[in-house]
Length: 233
Image 1: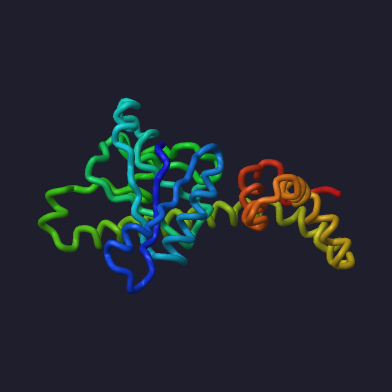
Image 2: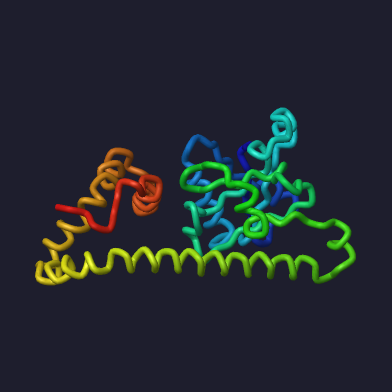
């Protein structure tokens, strides 16, 4: 998708002309690091200006045959379920198709892969009924409530699945747990935690990112298949 452009307003007290000249947009250049864009938008909207203006590139979208993967970008922390359970992004648009997002490109922030319309609709996207939206003052409130309800249901389902999986391995972990309880704190960490963190730490040392903690977190999300809950020394 085309790179979004976002920015915040100028300092308080500045005139309209001064504000316009002082405005500096934030430009994101996409390669594979979608998480940097996601983190930047999260910080701007939730911690900074509390608003963002995003310019979509209609000419680019049309040049790609109006395909959804070239549409307006919406990044979500999905990870095959719901990795992010505290923040819900919902994209309202009246031009989305019934069987295809068409003009909205919903992607997973870790893998960068597009989400199927069936996974996004009613959860991250809402196809606006333009007539109802103009005649019913509660239309968007009710639509958002429905999206939030579906989000809560998905979170509950994912926790139930995780709980069932945990029950399957509980008996095996019980014996290992009794041995781990006897280990000194430092040896426990070196035996159980460091093997999982080591690839991420090595990559962090090599790349020296501006935010090493965020880098390590997203590295482990992107390479989740390398790790398991039963690491062996």
